[in-house]
Length: 93
Length: 389
Image (cartoon, rainbow over all chains, first blue to last red; front, side, top):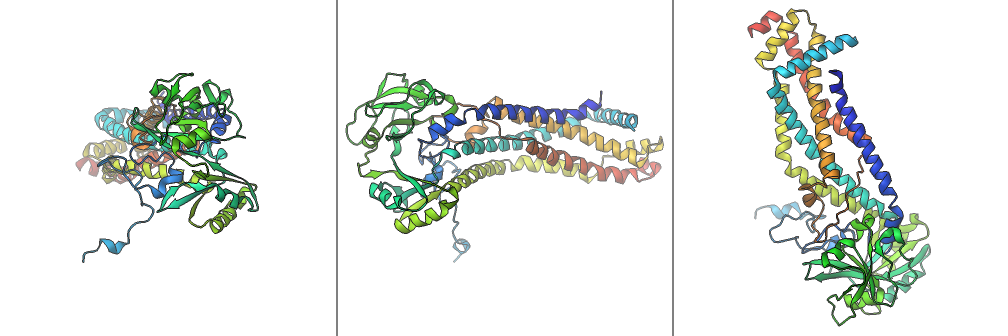
């Protein structure tokens, strides 16, 4: 009886793993439809972002993006983040 | 051995029950931390998985023209300059862009369809049919059509630099492609040009398909030689963008969770720093009644194992249910994006057994390991010394 307590974690891992596998297999049946539509779209970027900067296709536009998503809103993809200013710029004069 | 283990396990659970308040507090803290960390990982992996599903349809190379560091329209003559490159199978000028709809207070993506593109079949469409070129028709994302209150047969006039005929909705994309096309309006290329204000001799960018994908880098170099001032985006770079974009967002969420993680570390250090006087006395009594050092260590390890494995199981289960059954309320907005037209499609899990086992091992292993040292210190004391404190 008590040994069953130690089996809870393996059982949960198996249940999650099997459910994930089944859902992936079901989703894979949509691949032809996804390919057909994405062939017409400018990129395969997900339609998830918006706002002032509108990074609808971050893969094609990120290097030029220059605005926050909103006023005083934390910026999840800071523009120019790929290249930081030189360390010396933070020094006191 | 089996009976001995069962006896020690039943004793360990009895011991946990006697200190149930502490065990529950520890277990709940651990479970909530595992939930948060696992949910962020599940969501990030699911998004990467969805982005990868579309990779097969992407062109090998995309060419954009930059002016003042920003992408701008390319000339159609540029396409002709690239057609002669060895290994290039086709150069397709593409017409697409964004239009702000005041009614939605958000942008929609206008994509022009040229002749020669294969038509969409029923699997890609939820309702209606594919558009016919030259008839001012459109196919739109289902969330967009719903947000605008459009059904098949309705017309939509879009803001444009010069008057354009309204587009008739003839079909909506199926829910299977909502994640990619929720905000998309697909229309004739001529209509797209009129709406976006793009002259007939220009395109938004050029999509290049290469005969041998291994040569994409060479082709990209040749494009830069022939068209200085352009930006060339290779397919493998796009894959990297997804990894970086979602990885960075996940990192920010983890950074916000640092207080919770620190709290867990403090709990773990509390376990590592030593046992309470009550626990020491309990170990001394166990030794006095005949428990060996090994039996004591097994007891303490099993106590920790029960707490850690139950908490990890609860954490993994809650994270999975939160992300894939409930749609990650609260977390989705922070990690996924801020689109006005949000795709409602549930995400598909990309997590596999190896990742699940990794999370479990990273949680249970240190937790159990940290319980052994203080138990061993107490177990090597003489029972009388331990009871006197």
